[in-house]
Image 1 (tube, rainbow, N blue to C red):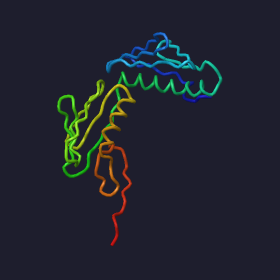
Image 2 (image 1 turned 180 degrees about the horizontal axis):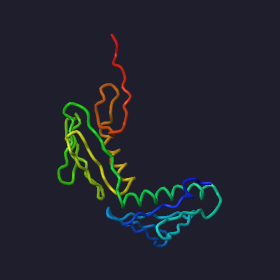
Image 3 (image 1 turned 60 degrees about the vertical axis):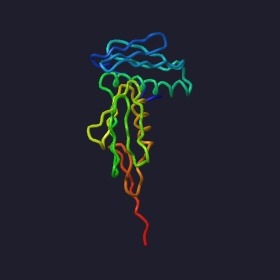
Length: 177
């Protein structure tokens, strides 16, 4: 039995959750998110909670039960408070800046990297060495942060590169004489 799926999702004030056919729609101050439901689960909305129930007792229905509940929880949190990923850049001459709808990264290559900021995502650089990725969709915020990190991931010898603020880099010892 799903331990995650059996708990209903509380809907905070200022967020409206509606069921349109087989699609759950959440609206809040940060925008609107939609989730297409699979055939294995049923969703009921009553009062200030959203409950998810499996349609059958097979393994796939039970796995989708907890997954759907987590996705709905992420949607509700996203449209009410939003999600944030903080990143920092380490390295001499490494910097980031937002220019219009692009994030411009100087990461030690012979050229600057221009990353087009997707719709629904807000990127800010308080300092040239810090990047803040914000948005309502948890998956999209994580994907954008991962794409930025992939341009130059942190290396283990000097720690240079783009890393998440809470990420711990295991440092290695250099070569010995």
